[in-house]
Length: 459
Image 1: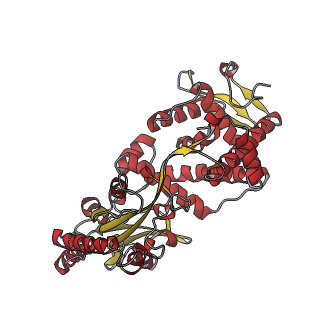
Image 2 (image 1 turned 180 degrees about the horizontal axis):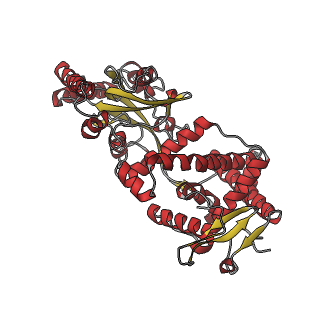
Image 3 (image 1 turned 30 degrees about the vertical axis):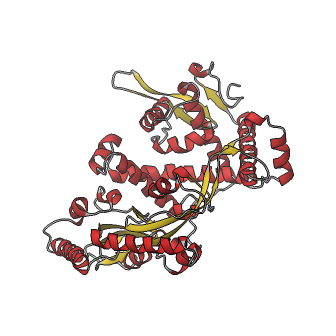
């Protein structure tokens, strides 16, 4: 990982930068000092140590001497921030607020959802942690936008891609791991009416206990919610936009107006919820919820598996095609319109492709197709889908591309991305070097013998 990329993650944990040159304790011993100056901003030894501790907690391994690498990373971020201010790069309050909540939620996950443990670790109340993070997240987003602006005009042509890889030694070509294309037909076992009523009665009981003041919503969420991520936080989701929530859930959440009230029971793709408002901010809402998932009976699973095995037999007998079965029988809305074909946008990777490396497939599917031949249809099996529901599936291995050295004809997009990323990294590196030349910098003598990634720090 390059110095610039690594700092984007680690800088999130750094405490706010301090403006004073040094701090002394009551008997005059220096406990903090300025180690670098970049422009008119100081980097304190405490800033360096904070990032070092957070890196250790994250398990980050440094490519060089961390005593040199860490302050250089902080200094590079200050260069981007300074240029972003010159170019009037703007970020929205809503985007900053959302990233603050995501970061706080991540930290809470690391301490098992305990607000008290997080406050103890940070030596601050949660309200102050949130306030400090807003400025840091604003700076981070400005830096990201500045980096994007610097490389937004970079493009590569097919001829440039071919020339780049023609000049590479054969042993330097990237290796493309084995990829597969998989189709599925899915059936969701029916839940018994008695089980649905049991779950709804539980949620009504929770609502009644909260309304009577017998207990807090947060306590019930911690004890009973089946959304493990939010349960540890008392059911709190953090600020969310309408588009990031299940439509049925969002409809109720955004219509809540009284933080003391508990919503009606809401059915989503994940199960059944009750919701309580925390706050609304612009076009985002923060709520807490309790999720309960009805349990599918073994008999219902067996019925769905039996039906799929019968369908698989008809497919092998060529009574109809797998594509027809996926379009007409499957109840998986994500793949039905694609004739059963899984694609990476469904896996939330940010890219759209029907080709998967085995480790990127849902594990139950990967285990089944790993030993299958192209065109083969599996026996039925059950799995837990992305929404946490038990579903039954048959899979067909549509295609397998064995691992190989990349070629321009077969893997052009992969090679194009390699060249494009190389050009972007080169542009960023040169910009940093040029920016250092035109920016006042001063280093503590401790850093004069460092081997830095970017030249020019020592004037």
